[in-house]
Image (cartoon, rainbow, N blue to C red; front, side, top):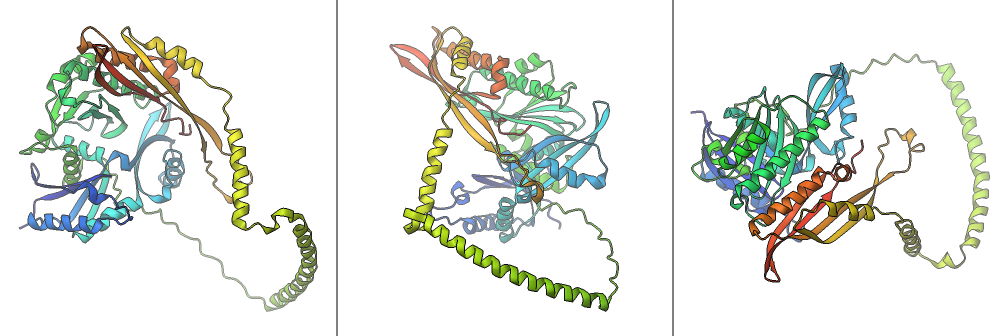
Length: 528
């Protein structure tokens, strides 16, 4: 009888989760120990132990599903969306690879990659919208080897957001022809994904209070925070003109019930909103986490293919080229003889020229030895050390900073403090980073410009909030963070403004809340 069970696997840098399920329900699960995915201090991996654990799980559960479907976490996947001029299919691959190099932080030769293209009308002309995904070859080769030795064959691999989207479409909670905002709530942080016509156009992680469990926070505080993060995300995609049409639905997913959060969020945006627990989506008898949601969605690919196809399990094959037939060469022995005599003469001339050149270089060598002076007894390591000392001193002089925006930040940021809050420290870090320039041809090396340098600025703020009503102190902190995010001038410098933590403590018999806020710009190193 044909085995109706399927196998899905989710891989993150610290965990690997494997589930066996039928079409409607999880049958069995496996979580491998985190320590097995890390190398020991001697640099030896634990892949053999990991293979043995998976083999035992398959044997104990009597699983006879030889094919494995993988979902990789957002941290391990390169997922980019960009526009290209319209072109024919025969021109597409070469042009797309060239364009993709601008958007990925790795060498494209080191990736297993795939892409999906859609022709759209934009600015009164045809454009090609590209969704590009890639994963490092050594990463997928490692896990494919582990699973192969355990008796499984990797037949498909994709980003986890597509796995989650497939499960939601399968459960009829998301429609492919709609624009949907997906909000994944994971303890004290979350992820916002904006889906348009079944394609992820935007993915953004955000954090809440790091010192508390999300489920234990006051619902008004949580809903306000989620509302603010959704608004920031929608404003960003509209500024980037990714799309401007109406959002059809907001969908909240979490391990626990989030029904009490839905009403204020839905009223704020006037958009229908639904909430789901992971347990209800997977039809599980016990609580499950997002790892199993992604694994479930990946395994559904074996019989339900409703989302775009971005298989990363193997390298994308190159477009075959047809070489033109070379014309036959007519032999002419008389011409060959004359050519041989000419070559012999040239060889003789080269020999005489090289002999004269040797005498010149020997004289230069004697002159150089005289110029060595005190350095004649230095070994090559000693000379390298001396050179490095001089270079480091020179670099230190060049790195001295003469200008700073400290005065601007000191005057601007305190203006955003609500009454009842104050700062105890403010630190600004400047870091100059050189951007490497891509050189397409060897002929361009001499013409290449020196590497550009960009200054990365980050600010860490620490302070306190006080209110006679201690429960209102966190609201003051959230208002401060919102004020920073609403400042157009600060947003030009920082695109990542987040509350790192907030801790209640006692000072002079008063209860105050200490907080830390970080301001960063993660896009400063990206080329326009």
